[in-house]
Image (tube, rainbow, N blue to C red; front, top):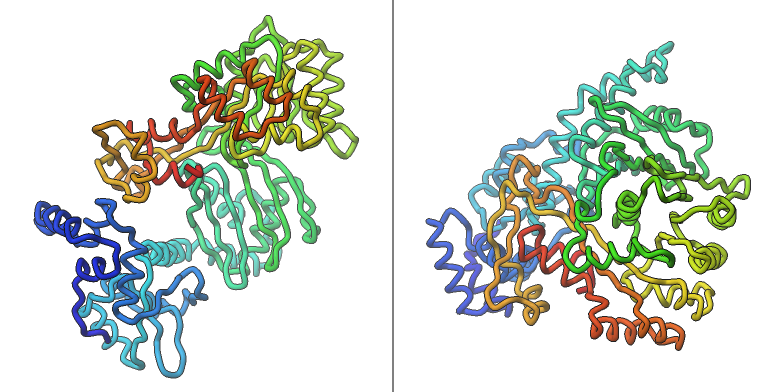
Amino acid sequence: MIKSKVRLGDLLIEEGLLTPELLTVALNRQKESDYTKKLGEVLVDSGYVSQKEIAQALAKQLNLKFTDLYGQNIDYHSMSKYSMSMLKNAKAIPYDEDEDYIYVATSDPLNYDALEVLERTIATKPLKLSLALEVDMEHIFDRLKIMETTKGIVENVKKEISLEGIKAESSSSAIMQLINLIIKDAIRQGASDLHIEPDAYKVSVRSRVDGILRENFVFDLDVYTALNSRIKILGNLDISEKRKAQDGRFRLKIDGGDYDFRLSTTPTMHGESIVMRILDQNKILLSLDEIGVEGENLKALEELIRSPYGIVFVTGPTGSGKTTTLYAALNDVKSLENKVMTVEDPIEYELPLVQQIQTNDKVGFGYYEALKSFLRQDPDIIMVGEVRDVDTLNAAAQASLTGHLVFSTLHTNDAPSAITRMSQMGLESYLVSDSLIGIVAQRLVRQNCKHCLEKYTPHHKYIRKVFRHLPQSFQFYKGKGCRKCNNTGYSGRVMICEVLRVTEEISQMITQGKNKFDIAQKAEEAGAYKPMLFDGLTKALRGDTTLEEIYRVTRG
């Protein structure tokens, strides 16, 4: 057991992570809090160092190994022999054992008294300590709690599986009750997706809340087969086919609300991974300002979607809210005077006054075939779910040149990249310049919880990157964490975006084959483009999100 005393401030100064002046400031702030916070907490809250930097410096000083708990094969059943209160008090996780030692990771190696109590209690072998991040420890403790609370439900499912004559297809069966519990819990959290993932030892059920995955349930593998089969039956999939990916869809009424679920299965090493996209039919009829488009971006986008013809692309990675933006744009322009047609794969939400068409590759009716048929249907506005190939892109360009307004999506990281992507796909540069009128690039960032908002100072590396764009007096905010936000500090998501308008000058540059950097620079100078970092910075300064979130989803 470690007995040496280490002064954290001196250690961080030695490692070059902190200056004596900043240490003095942090110590004064600790004193102002009546020492209710540890020095490490004050340093992290002040943005001087990160938790990982503190942990790595401590590990080096104490000659300890730094352990990534997620890289360890932790036997959760064997951990039941330890007192959870004792482990939490010592902030320790026993993650391995051999003939000589019990290997224990801790986030507080200087908590000598609690660690000695733990060592005396284990008694059979000495402890071999290593250092781990506190946030990883908390996730492990959460998983243990989850396994304990779901133990009764899982036992009922196991009994049902073992009894002959019990049909898992019954709506009152234990397995269906388990599925309803999983789905209701995800909806209660406001999840967008559910992931059911088997590994060699367990089945993990995670939900994507505000863009981040959280683990909600952990089951034994013998529950997985019944869970997998019943979900595939719901989605009208072939339960005997486990060698290839399948897609399906089903609808459930949960707590009085109508929800659609897009189902996807794909084979992995340990079984089929199941992902369900949760589509709330009551939340789609939003306007552009309600989804987070504001200021100059809102004005520019409203001008684009009211153009008589041309192509408007919405770009961004998967899960960045492109479809929601397209639906919001259609919701703003649809009317009895316009004929609006969409081709989608799949149709996610039903929109009034809009003719929506589902692609069907099995019969040769894809995006390109649908677009050709649209032109004989006399539409005013066309939405193409995604441009995937040059044929679809060329058809969209021809539609725009014949007097139609076309909305679609591309997978690019920023707005200027969409221009070069169109050329790379094979569309002639003169067709790009003649048809393209604007591009929106977007990301979704987690929104600060309004119930626990407090002032804070981001890490100095983030401040340094944007310092020249900050006002003379500035303040950032973050959610401290409370019951309303499940102690995450975040609740919901907000869009940050950039809009590039294709002016006459930009159109000429496209025809000349200029690269995206030259185009972006000229568009900025002309006031036709502003990178999304600025939109994110505005929302961070207003307290909508944090600076760390902006850098998590953008390159800065």
